Image 1 (cartoon, rainbow, N blue to C red):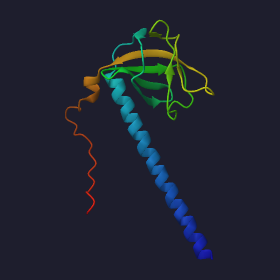
Image 2 (image 1 turned 180 degrees about the vertical axis):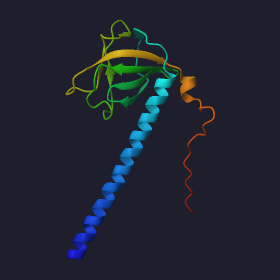
Image 3 (image 1 turned 60 degrees about the horizontal axis):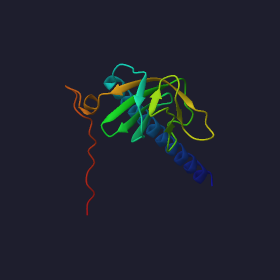
Image 4 (image 1 turned 135 degrees about the horizontal axis):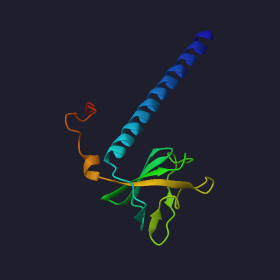
Length: 148
């Protein structure tokens, strides 16, 4: 009985160690993506034209990228941490007369969470964001094909 208990504890410890590794990989990928957006972002603007949200990507608790069209992205910095930004399935932006204004409009993550005020908006150069860096090879995962 003691051997079974010991083996169960070893299995639980191994599973928890695997979860820690996955969490570190996710955090590293998220930080790399955030750095790429910051490097591709231009000078701050005080407003953007906004008709609909095409897509969005959380980068941190206080930063996200929004796409108003497939070829138009904006890096949005928030005033403090935005609750559930990384984990929510949907967001909304407040706007006035089809414009989102810095220090006035907000990001909404859901009814129970308070709104997050927009501190800064910067345009993102998508060509720069999507181009591979010169002198640095792309990281590729090589996975063998399963045998049939």
